Image 1 (cartoon, rainbow, N blue to C red):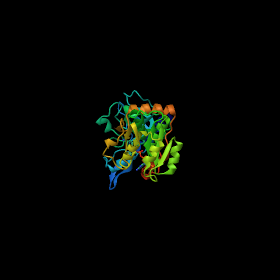
Image 2 (image 1 turned 60 degrees about the vertical axis):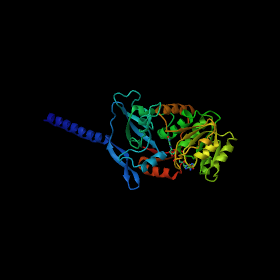
Image 3 (image 1 turned 60 degrees about the horizontal axis):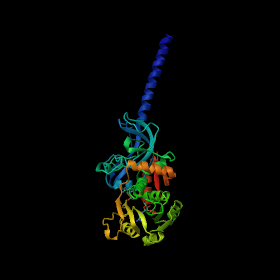
Image 4 (image 1 turned 90 degrees about the horizontal axis):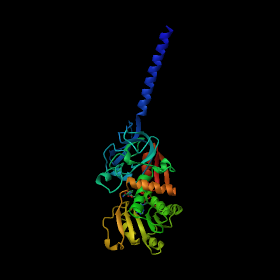
Length: 361
Ligand SMILES: NC(=O)c1ccc[n+]([C@@H]2O[C@H](COP(=O)([O-])OP(=O)(O)OC[C@H]3O[C@@H](n4cnc5c(N)ncnc54)[C@H](OP(=O)(O)O)[C@@H]3O)[C@@H](O)[C@H]2O)c1
């Protein structure tokens, strides 16, 4: 009799164990993520509970620890993307599982997603440009994501997840403009417009390369911070409406060698007035609308214009080496929690920030 009771007890314990572990497994298989859903005034963020994704043979499962916002993330809301799209291009986290054919990553690696899920390097292709995360394909605002291994890079060891999450779009765009396309050199003058994500990275990268960054802003307070980050010249474009003349004076007539034009219609033509012979204009953004007409007659001899599309995975790896060599720290203006993601979007819309806005998970 005691034998029967004891085996009955063991059976009950086993049953309870099976039930409790299947409950906890069911829990482990659910994650939270934001999806976009169209509403009366464009798309909005909706938090959903979904099944944890599983990596296919060439894919990596990443637990996202931080996401950063870019101006593009606001623009995507107005474009009415398909319902269910996961927003935001930039995220960093830890590898928690890998598919059977993955060779470049192991569980525990610290990684960031590339802006284009499918632009490993070389020339841009239509397929690469269609793979912008959080726009063309699913983004990063999710507790976990899966990515093909060629859509990830290892992040520099000295950076936190919050810092690394600022790199995929803004930093890489500034890198591509200055280094891959511009071949920036020590002593050259670089013009940055405003103190948003791309421009502050442009300032830091230019300063680290020994170039001379000159930056504009609508805020004197932000210009003080820009000087602390290495700007050799600052101009308030709101109080000084002929700011391009002041910029030219700051170069002592030599002119600007590299313009990172993130504003478009309101700045491009003035920036051309500051350009040196053999200078380079990187056409990046349209914060004031697109400058559709290029006045070729006003462009100095030898100058070039490049239309930038962030950068490739190879660019990202090269940038990470440079960042590590210079221990360059991204400037984070404010960190929001995962639950506060809609507030983070609203904050970006005020343009009160300098540098980057981060959401931590
Ligand atoms: N082509 C590409 O590959 C690429 C990649 C990344 C970004 N972009 C584009 O580049 C632009 C900037 O992106 P972001 O994420 O860096 O933006 P962001 O962080 O939101 O930067 C906004 C800042 O730009 C400045 N600004 C706004 N209007 C201005 C004006 N009329 N004159 C001068 N400065 C002005 C303001 O700086 P102050 O407050 O200091 O005045 C504002 O705070 C966006 O249009 C984005 O879509 C393009």
